[in-house]
Image (cartoon, rainbow, N blue to C red; front, side):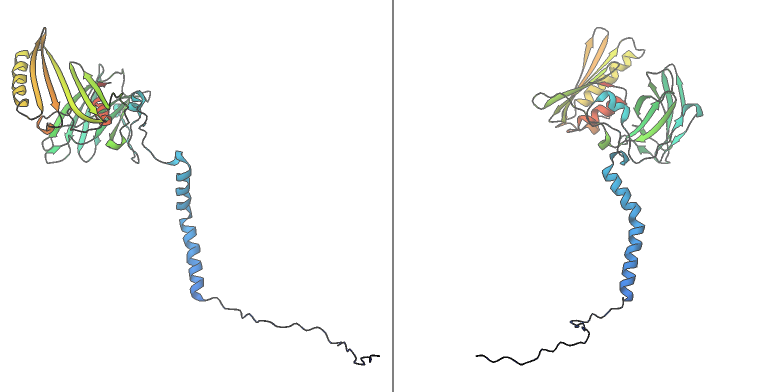
Amino acid sequence: MSKKNNQKIIISNEELKPTVLYTIKEKKASLLGVIIVFALFIGVVYFLPQATALYEKYTKKDDITIPSVKPNGDKEDDDQDADVPDVTLVKYNLSDNPTITNTDIIISDFTFQDGTLNFKITNAKATAANLKNKKYYLEVYNTSDTLIKRIKIAEDNYAASESKNYSYQLNSTNVGYFYLKEIAVDNYPNLNLEEVENRATLTCSLDDEILVYSFESKELKNISHTLTIKNTVSDYASQITTYQALATTYNGYNGVTASLNAITDGFTFNTTLDLTKANISNLNNNNYYAHKTNPNIVNFEMEARGYTCS
């Protein structure tokens, strides 16, 4: 028979006491930490508007300033919309007899009569200037805010402070105002020419003059130029002498062929350029472009000179 365990179990009447496992010491914030946090807060507040604007530019296309030149090759609309981005334009009213000035030129003495716009361009510098490579355009609007014509201007050599007069025929009965723009080549509208085996042509005509530009893989390769002189012009004999001499000069250049051909009522002056060989700087003609020039450039600039291109 087993013995009974006489050990007594004693239950303490004392209150339960918490057991301390680990003591966390409270750290005082350092002065450097406070300064860094404060600086970050100020930075966020200061740059928040700029960050918001950049975000909106990225997400909202309407808020981005872009040129209004259309990239779809629609020539009829493109000529109305070529623009210069990020430039504040000044509107010049014809009725105010304006003078338009920039660092290179002064445009003044505007008149419009019988469909012809006349004005004077003066070299703004006291030294000679060659502005043929400049891309200055005068945009002419009627009183109904419709673009009448975009004119490529100042494609000339000027002596110091020299003035020259210019006239342009407009298809309009009235002129309201002008804008002067410098349009970069990159902002010219695209032109989609119909190609056959990577070859295409662009024909530009004005009065008695026709220029045919031949492209290969969208690069200019040849130019054919025909100018017709009628025997009704007052200085017809002088014109024959002038173009005979010019043909002789042109034929002395590599890649250039020129000739005079008699027709019933006058003569034609024909020039053919092989741009892989010809140096167009010898020919002093703004309508002649260098080898590999893009058709966008030829079309946009020729139409701004008054030619009809197709």
